[in-house]
Image 1 (cartoon, one colour):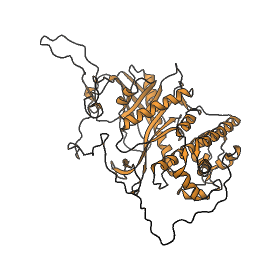
Image 2 (spheres, rainbow, N blue to C red; image 1 turned 135 degrees about the horizontal axis):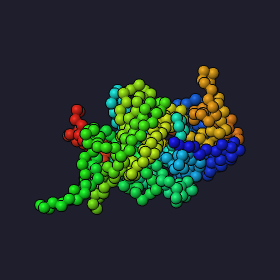
Image 3 (cartoon, rainbow, N blue to C red; image 1 turned 60 degrees about the vertical axis):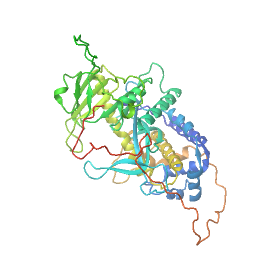
Length: 488
């Protein structure tokens, strides 16, 4: 179970919000006034953001649309200072006092941006069943602190744009390492506190991340595919008259073969209102059998044994009326108790809250609505959206339910980010805007009418590039109808 560390006193909430707005303005080192007013326009505009230029019509944006685009293209934000400010804000914590962080990649699709550099093919889901598509865009790795219960609130802490051909695991580990250092410097984690729980989806290699971050006070909890094959602990060494090298791995643990499971280390049963009877089975000290290929090809030492706990989660029914399938989780710790098993699978279910945050950023705040050309401008706009979401989170104790006539009343502590945004224009008056008044100016003449553009923008192709810089080729065994076992 998670608990939320939010400010409940309204006077203190006003001070926290005003202080963050002042710090945000100081982090904008160039075109600060235009960038800050663009953020206020993003928060105070009625309805979803459909176009970027439409924000220049908001009363909070006192400058023209030319100044807005100039701020995004030529402005500057001290991102490192802004990251430290986000790490120092009140964050949600678990019932035992630990931080629970979720890491996921969300794409900013730019299929028509032929003039936009550094685009990569982003994995997206199609409308059909089991339909996957690769669409050019800018993928962003985002880290957020999770809250408790059924909520759409998360605390966004960091965002990094992934370049083409990037090793997602390496970048994710560096991102988590830097974030843990900032949380430690801000006093969010101290020596003696419980380890920070990092929750990952199936797109990440949880054992490798746990190995790369083994020197940090973190626990890794990730979902695994249902076709994985892990190994049991090394069996006791037995004298063999003929000699031979001792075994390094135990027997196979095949996720899809119950005959290989043996007796569980721990079993829990929980009655839930949403999923019915939830059964969690845990097997201790299972590890993948690593080989010197892919990410481990340049490992100059002996391949490690990365042991952990495997949890199989089954539910009685799903809210979508679909057929429930078992969920496989891997936890980087061993000797799990029934309490640890329940804490792990409940924390993983809260990981889906970050999907609600992605939907809010894209559909309501218009994160992916602008058709910006330069990746640097996209990064500035991304951080403006993150700071806007942070201000909504800080304004939760101050917001009132400005519901539509057809909507049901909601308790103040249950307001969604979209409903808090409806009244932010009234809350904005509680903290003065540090942005200065615009100076009167006249627009430039621009290119003469009828003249052609003699400096066309360069075109950038998008290709599948591996981390090594080589082109990607689909393996011959990856054909339709074949499902090779994932033994690594």
